Length: 250
Image 1: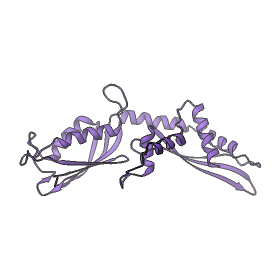
Image 2 (image 1 turned 90 degrees about the horizontal axis):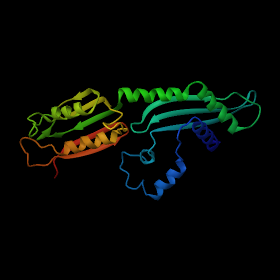
Image 3 (image 1 turned 60 degrees about the horizontal axis):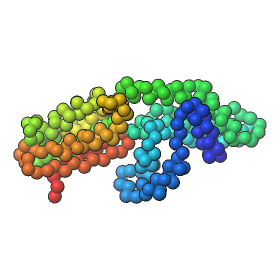
Image 4 (image 1 turned 135 degrees about the vertical axis):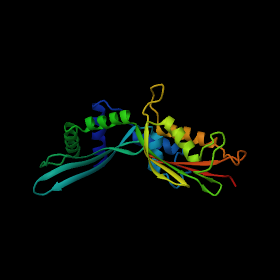
């Protein structure tokens, strides 16, 4: 019954004016393009597929067809909506149809989803997205530098300030706001880093572009004591958390 449930949900979303991706076709294309080859240990096939799909929002559907001998049959949908770029949860709803005394999964799914729509499911989703536009896209930043001659207190060439302050100065110029959670000699952790939703041209500003810009900036840094020595910066993105580690090449 799951395919029936998915088809009905897609049909209703299209009727409401949403553009719905054909996930099966996208998955076949991803396999043809060998997208899933060479996944690192931190990235799942699901993560890679969502990144490849280009979807702004994705819904996860859990479907149950209940058969009650005394009351009849009904469909129960659990719908979870996420902002794909950061895996941020947008909605979580359970939709239930009325019990009926006949067997018609497709019709019952439609009734269950229609009940959610009547209760404001899509309006709630739109409001959450509008909040993202106003407040910014939330991500976390984790920086690690734990060598004896390279850590958060190491003075940077040209800036005459420690690595920690150099990073914060750059981030201050790029984001709307942030909150510092961890700050010691070897690490810097920033929570609730709010990225602008649009760039200077009014186009959507995906978090990976910010991460790439930050990584490129970090690669240019040199320590004051060893300006001739290039710093190696490893970047890893896992959902809405971005990790950066600073080392010297062997």
